[in-house]
Every structure is written in C-alpha cells, then in structure tokens.
Length: 411
Image (cartoon, rainbow, N blue to C red; front, side):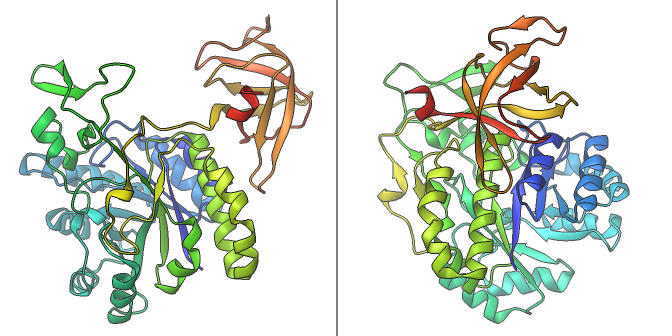
C-alpha cells in the first residue's frame, strides 16, 4: 500500500489532511523549510501536530530542506535539537552538511528523508544516501516512470522511494532555481521564492530596499504562461507498477479546501485502484470534476511520460482558477446544532453551501440563520477571519470543510 503524503501549512490544515485521508503529512517549522511565506508551525504547534497524527495512526514529517549557508549552520543545529524533542517520524533534508548534523543530533527513531532538492536522478545517488542511513529518497522532478522503475530495480527493496504526483511545477532542476534571487533578491533555496518564472515580463515593484516582487500591470495581465500543475490521478496503476512507496502532493501554502479536495480524491483513487482497476477507471470522471474544484492551473503529467514540451505550459492562462470558494472549517457544533466557524469568504443567509465529508459526500445545506460572536443576528458574514455562529438545514460535524461551487453562484 503506497503512502499518501499531504502538505500542510498550519496546524488546522494538518488536522484537515488527516481527516480527509492522508497517511502522512509534511510541514515546515518556523525556520529552515523551503516555504518561508507559508504560515508554518511554531514549536508548540509542531508538538501538537505530531501528537495528533500519532493519535490517529498517521505520520508527520518536518521539512528542513533549505541549502543552509555557513552563517546559519549553528542555528540549524539548535533547531534540529528542538525537533528531536518533538519526535516527528522524519525530517526532510537536502544538503549533505545538514544531513551530517541531523545524523548527529536526531534520535534513531526520527528517520531522514532526502529532499528532491538534492537532485536525485540515478540509482547510484539513491544507494549513496541509503548507505549513509537515509530511509527515503525523493525523486527529482525530471525522472520518468521508466527511470523510476529502473531505479527501483537497482536499489534494496526496503529503500523507500517518494515522488511528487500532484501540484505546482517549477522551472528549475529538482527545485534548485536561481531566477528569483537574480531578479528579486529573494533566494528560492532559502525558502523565499517569488515565482518570477510565471510572469511575462520582469515587471516588479520594490517591497523593501533592494528586494523586488513581480506585479501585474493591467486587466489583460502580464503572464507569458503558467506552468501547468502536475496531476497523476489518471495514472495510479502506472505509479504503483513503478514501485513508488510514497505519493506526494505539493502545496504547503494552499488552503484547507485544496487539501481536503485533493486528499479525498487521491485517497479514493488509490484505495479503489488497489481493489479493482476497472472500478477505479469508472470513478475517474467524478474525481476529475472534484479535483477541478480546487484552485489550480491546467494539468500536465510532467516528466513521467517523457520530457514535456509546449503543451505543458498554459500560454493563455491567468492566475489560478477557482471552481470552489472556501467558506471555512467547522470548529465546533453545539448541542443545539449551532455551527461555529472562522469565516474565510462571504456568504449569506438563505444561500446553499456544501459540507465536504471525508467519505466522499458533498452535503448541500441551506443557511437558516447567522449571528456574530456576540449573538447579534447578521444577514451575511462579510469580514474574513470573523467568528460566526450559524444554523443549517443539515447536520454538520467538526472538521467539515464548507464551500460554495462556482456553478452554484452562476445559477
């Protein structure tokens, strides 16, 4: 059974990933991950995330995969010491020096996984890391399924292979990119990528002295292309045949809605395929329609079936499309069935929303009434991050993701 590995940028999203079917979750701490702009988790949140995952029979990995400069190595060592006390299931490392520190500092029960940033594209590299004590190596994004299958044949069976199967693709070599640092002063390899490869021109504004961020010029947009997102939900049998142990989804900066939709779809796809490939093929149209509800670009199979060409770019695309609007996550249900949540986007009394259930159902529920945190009746919830109390026509459960689909708003 392959592992379904899901990203999370906050403690609440860790819980969403677990609830909707993740076998393992990977997160970043406050330092040394490659998503500096993600909310990331504090030390106490990391400890709670580890405890929550373990209580539910799941695993938690901490990404510490920056390419650290000498000036950062002592802080990196101290950070790993704090991670060691929390006891996650693994840390994700990219740099040989960082690997040496991890081997020295971490207890044996905390595994070391080698990040895609380490450019892992041949069997000798995989064997090198396994020989040093790594438990898992993450495939370079450039590998085809044929190459992964050949690597699987040449390495020990208990040596784990992880590969990205869904999410954003960078213009880089195994994630090593210098474009952001060159154009904006923000280094991708230290977690501060500004994604300038997705912009038509280097149109930038100064965000702080000496640092620049790409900006959009006008309504027509300034995009040359958006690299299409990877999606392999159509190819679960081929992924299984290649001998991949962990199917990894990209997106530590994504919302709980994205995580819930993608996790639930891949969970059903994997489980169904293992049971019956014919049944798996029959549910793909429904899973496709559901995946489109997450905020995403057009999709590609990346390098899995050969080097991608122009078809892997969406030349006429703008920013991510949104087929669903994330309304919030149910945080509490009182004895009288009042739903409590933190609002993410506006909706109104009398609207019909969808309650996403982990079992695959999307339950339509009419909004009967709403009050603010002080109990005052309100007709809508227009202010993001407000705490709202609400009555629905259907029963909600703690952890349900609430959404409204675009086709609902266009009716």
